[in-house]
Image (cartoon, rainbow, N blue to C red):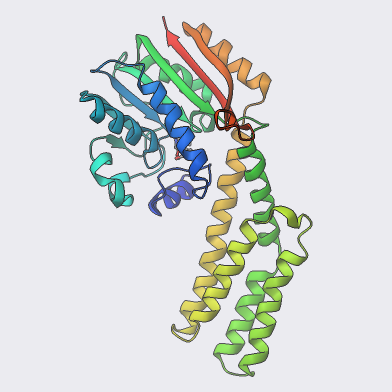
Length: 320
Ligand SMILES: C[S@@+](CC[C@H](N)C(=O)[O-])C[C@H]1O[C@@H](n2cnc3c(N)ncnc32)[C@H](O)[C@@H]1O
């Protein structure tokens, strides 16, 4: 049994993102990643069963469905995640595609509810490395057919994804360790009790928020702090529309969400594999009768003549 805390991911996927790790604003990067997976799916015939481990809201299965539909293939596509996922409910804009996937939440990579040798293809994008790989890798091998393929993009300790998310985690720590949430609550309480002139309190509130970014030690890469400044400003603007208790709860919720986000960012950073851990994983896979098809950096940008950006490790192996 896996008893890992999943509230952070449960809430993340409920908010409706189709994927994580690569910023939603980075559409070019995401397109290249999608094209990469399309290239993988194009290696398979018309009647496979595939499983995506740690699927989140089902980005990879959605790409597999799209590809299979275009080719008029009848693929059986599954996605599992330890979090309490429900992609069809949470990503309504992709419902038609996601409806064609068999999703199961609350399923640990370490304990897959499938018969041995069921799948032709098992994939994982930034997911299996979050699990206990001493158990999840043999489990993945169990459900894969002989001749089946395992493909994974894994966090790497020197990828841009890990570097950016590490910076974000530091910003989140800075905010959580600051007094900003208490200060905002105190000022809003004062304002709501109308004990002081609103203008002065408003100015103080804004000043406190501005101070956050001004006094941050590495202001060049601010990401989380501006988002929190905006959220706290929005709450201030709502203060006349809601009851005081509700407004103060909004501040508590903003802090709780940030704390959950920080834990996810820390998990991401600690799941990243360095070269030694990657080697260990490959040795483990070889001992489970896998032959290496491909191993290398997962980078994008080079084909378009842009800067080459490393997003992780990519491995593809075939079970003998
Ligand atoms: C970074 S997200 C990646 C999601 C998706 N593959 C994507 O690329 O958008 C990592 C996912 O792994 C899941 N996860 C973490 N530990 C797991 C485990 N032991 N078994 C199954 N899923 C797990 C998390 O719940 C989360 O949804």
